[in-house]
Length: 210
Image 1 (cartoon, one colour):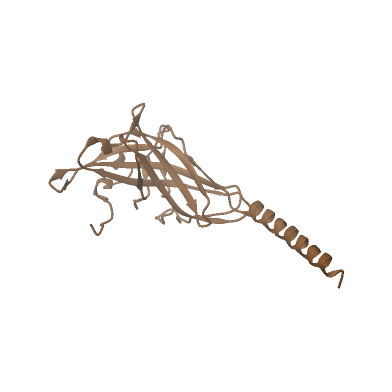
Image 2: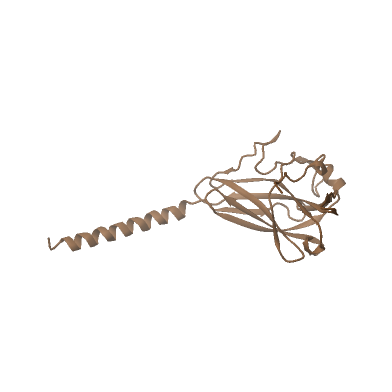
């Protein structure tokens, strides 16, 4: 019986060591996502959309297009859960915008002049599967579209830095890991956007209960 305290202590130490190694393997094997903007000087845009009347006031609507690449640097496969845009306003507040479904952009995109068909992140299209699963050591990419609509005071309008709208994309996976990338959106005309995404001005925010 005099050995029982030592046996209990040894069992406790062994349990701690085993737990340490399990924790070590968990952190070693966990998914690690990393998001970045693809060609940030060419593929990150914002543009004005036709306004509407809300509570007797004409709104100010903007569309935001971003081209993202998300890689998985961990040892575990993972699926993405969300990729929301946080738009900085003149009031120095962050407005959360969820992605909106759009057709696959195609046409003369960017500075190269080449005709391309680009996937929409997390959305199945005619040419892309739209999977959000990222293999260990792999990556996925695609465009994502957001709409912001304001009425009333101009303080809610997008904050400008060097004539570009200030935003931040936060990407999260199903395990709760996240990665953020700061984005500066260059202003382009709605007509130019419609050449690569037909009828984008007809796409609107989903209805709410308000």
